[in-house]
Length: 84
Image 1: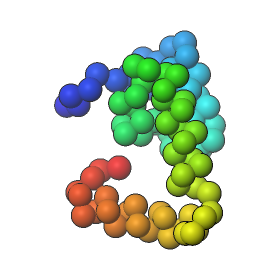
Image 2: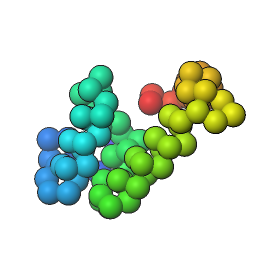
Image 3: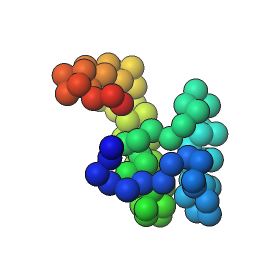
């Protein structure tokens, strides 16, 4: 049970539904919104900014390529026993 009240996929409407649709269109391998992003759903304007920032931070090459970043994120999630 989450401590933050968020909007589930099937309950999304208006701007939240629009953000969810855009995310799913960009990530067709994910049929549902990740819970780590749902926690921002009460503020869809901020949710959109978090998604945009996340893509630019995590999925653009810099000192590390995307594959290396994904490996680090997977390792850290495993250490933290994180379901994401």
